[in-house]
Image (cartoon, rainbow, N blue to C red; front, side):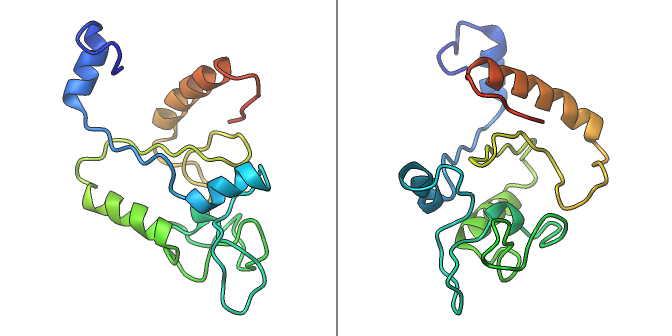
Length: 156
């Protein structure tokens, strides 16, 4: 969109009417660890007092269905939800940003480094969200675009 600004009417209008907030990497320590040690690492690299295990799954640390289906209270598990909702500084920073901009945010997209899947709300409950139809179509479109650019397969 940025490259075609002023030349392509739809992209120009898109950029003129919307503000984009881009946070390239939330879990920088975990991200670096995926490049140096374990490609499929999913947690932070923080340590917990009284535990020999490392990290919290930031996806399960938000205060939305905290520590429910698919999450673990065991710090050694990959899906460890943390000691409390938003106990991790990374989660707290993102949640505070979203709360402070809630009235203007129209969409929130996060790209996960683990498992090569495209997900949308909510993994803490088996019920589909009320706006599932609205979420499903753009998710399929995004999935199609992403898989056309790569040699690996993504799942919905």
